[in-house]
Image 1 (cartoon, rainbow, N blue to C red):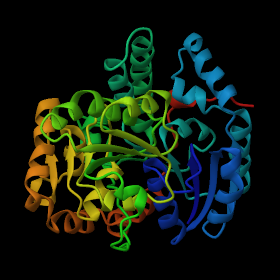
Image 2 (image 1 turned 30 degrees about the vertical axis):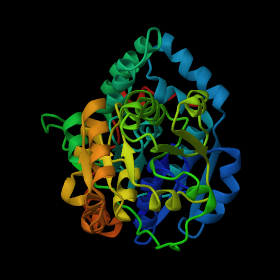
Image 3 (image 1 turned 180 degrees about the vertical axis):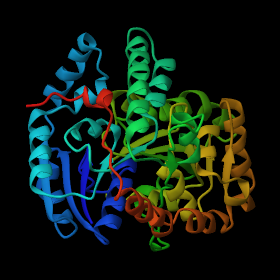
Image 4 (image 1 turned 45 degrees about the vertical axis):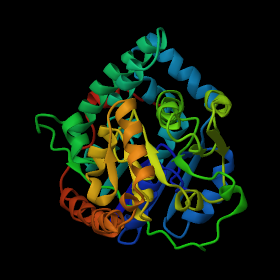
Amino acid sequence: MNILFLSHRIPYPPDKGEKIRAYQELRFLAQRHTVDLFAFADAEEQSVGRAALAPLCREIYLERLNRGVSMARAAASLLTGEPFTTAYYRSASMAKAVRRALSRTKYDAIFVYCSAMAPYVTDCSQIPVCVDFVDSDASKWAQYSRHTKFPMSWIYEREARKLGAYERAVASSARLSLVSTPLEVETIDPEGALGVRALQNGVSAATPRSAATPKEIASLGNYVVFVGQMDYLPNVDAACYFTEKILPLIRSTHPELRFAIVGRNPSKRVRRLAAWPGTVVIGAVPEVQPYLEHAIAAVAPFRICQGVQNKILEALSIGLPVVATPRPARAVGAGEKELLFVAEGAEEFAQAVRRLLENPEMRRGSGGKEFVERQYNWETNLKPLDRWISEIASTGGGVSDEAKDYVVAN
């Protein structure tokens, strides 16, 4: 089959959740079909990404995302009633490139990664469309609104409302709608009327490292670790919550414990956390895995989150215990037998970490690794995708007229 693959971000390098899933889906489909990729990319991503993805794709069209222009479009959507998300990714040149591809190639199916790209499928009413929402962005914006002050709380609440209506419009007309977990199915399609299906994530097998501890890690002593893109609001909020509310409770009985924050682009708010006793802001590192391997535990104290957190899977896959708040833990579907400990509220979270500190035997076991290998294998979890795409390939239908209104033609 010929498949047109649209993505709001180039799926390379696969170094964070949304890119990892997109890359794995692209790779999986390209091994079985002919795929053309159309995506937005930063200037520095274009040459590296094109070279890496060229063996997978027949054609690659990359358009530079001008953040200033995109932000202006998003701001202007306050006047038009459009969601910020679709306005941010609205581009006449991308729309023209997609129309040109549709006019010269007979596609059997269109794969849309992220609902923001669905409006570009405006001239293909006879081609079946699969939309991978990954998770409900509308629900995430609603969570943002509950954790911020006015006027941002109002802006986030507006986006949750507008984007939620848009997601439902897309899901109601796409031939196939996907999300990453059954929990996300319940969020987008609570009554089961839209036929949304769960296509679970995977995690790549970790390569064992040397037993030697790098000096910069050894200097941390006993520590728990948080890993993530540190200018992303859910990660920023989680790191601040742990530092300000949970860590002082733990250090009242275990003053030696330190909290290592590992990840690119720490925001100003995150950098300020280094002033708190016990918190170390490390920033970008060549490899995250050594920081996981030598930690006592990973923490996932999310108050804002959607879908499966890859950072939890990566920790469990090497046998590292994880303490998480209930929502991300439910998305993963593991428990204490798999070394995933669930805690709600600062005191309960602190107590869970203390238990791991005081009971080393609780930190050992292969349950987490076995669980991830069994439940989160990419090849196994992606198998239904080929069958589902093949099933819709003989049917018609693009996206609804309501969804089409979100893109401006050239």
